[in-house]
Image (cartoon, rainbow, N blue to C red; front, top):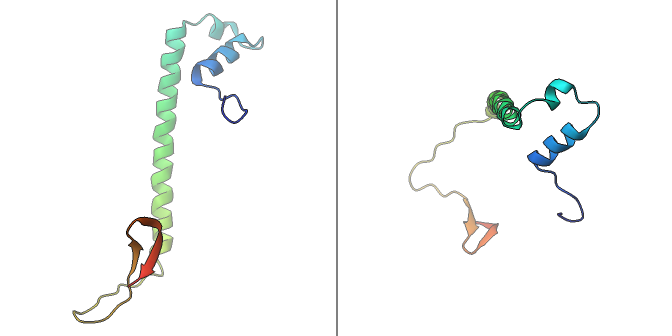
Length: 96
């Protein structure tokens, strides 16, 4: 129990789905090991699809971000402002 809520794990979800009356007999009569292995394969294939979609979204956002960027180069001796984090204070930064 976490903050007054019951967090369900994979085995609890499987148990609850098997105990429901509307579950087909083919699922109920299936071996637990086979069911878990098939569930694992489905999760892995879902993760592959999610990773592919994530890569597409990253490329799309990079394209839109890079549209308005301009290359900047500085010569030696030119003074610039640099935003650096403060040592010991990771959430603060200061211009140098």
